[in-house]
Structure formats: C-alpha cells, structure tokens
Length: 211
Image 1: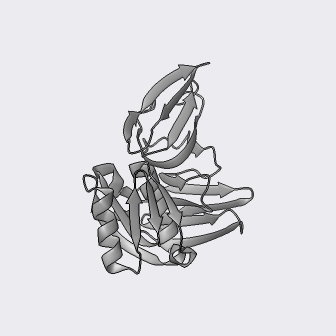
Image 2: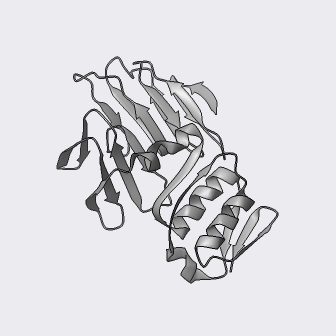
Image 3: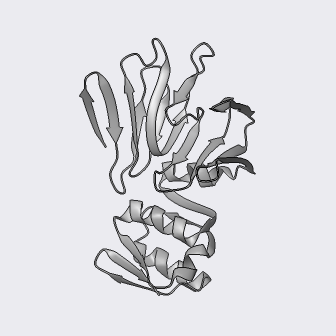
C-alpha cells in the first residue's frame, strides 16, 4: 500500500492482493484489505475522528467516548465491508460498542452482531457474526460463509487480479462456503470449488471462464 499526503489528507490505498496495517493518530489500528482505501485529514484525533473508506477495512478502535469514530459512508463502528459495485454494506462488531446511524435511523450493535444495509432496497437487516468470515483475511486466509458464487468471484478478482467471465449465468446464484489460505493458487481454489459445486471452469491467462 502507498501512503500519500496531499493538502494535509493522508490516504492509504491497497492494490490487488495487497494488505496494509496502519496506525492512526489516535492510536487506533486499521487493516486495509485488497483493493481498499482509507483517508483522513489532519483534524483526525484532535477535533473529530472522521475517516473515509472504501472496500474491506478492519478497525481496532481506541476508546474515546467524546469523539466517536465516524465513517464517511454514514455507518460508524468497527469493521465495514463496502465495495462500490456491491449492493450491501455490512458492519460487523466483534467487541466493544458501535452505533450505526443512517439518516434518522440509529442503533447500537452488540458484540457478535452484523448489520447489513442493502443499498438498492434501503433496507437494514441483522445477522449473527461468524467472526472468522469477517476477520480471517487479516491473517492471510479467505473465509466464505454461504456467499453467492458471483460475490465469491468478485473477491477472487480482487485477490488474484483476474476477471471472471460467466458463460453460464445460472451459476452466479449458487451458494458457496469454505476457507482458503492466502498461499493457495487460484487454480487450487477453483479445483476445490468445482469438486463441491456444479461449477465448471477454464483459466486462460488472467481470465477465468465459468461454463
């Protein structure tokens, strides 16, 4: 990840397959997953704790009730997963306290809960946290908990710098769960997927064709 400073804004951005661990001025620690970014200006930790982010980010937040940590996509808390092309923003709380706010809506989360905001339906739902699915990537693992194959391919695209082309559209909605270690190749992962699901594939250079 590159750290660049311009007009007193600090931005940390990661590329494909990269992860970055960053200490914020207030002592909070942030892990930025592949193809994600955070940015904050010099008032962070002094007047406020407001941070812009996109992608998958894990915060270990320093407690300071007088200055709660705010995310710029209007959800504040511990761990946010919000890729622009995906319909859902999720906020997972592992420990501590988090308040989610969106317009007039406001709710406190309990540890072990995930709040899912669906952008297209503007609907908020709750799930139980399977904590490894939200945090495994910090330790170089990928963990999938009943994810559609389409969502899974988006993650693989970000981790391996490939593009998936669907010759069979029906496969997109297939459900998949499992975990992989970071050092496993895309070939290995696709082989595992094809043995446990009806997915047939071929890899040509940096494109994976799903048949």
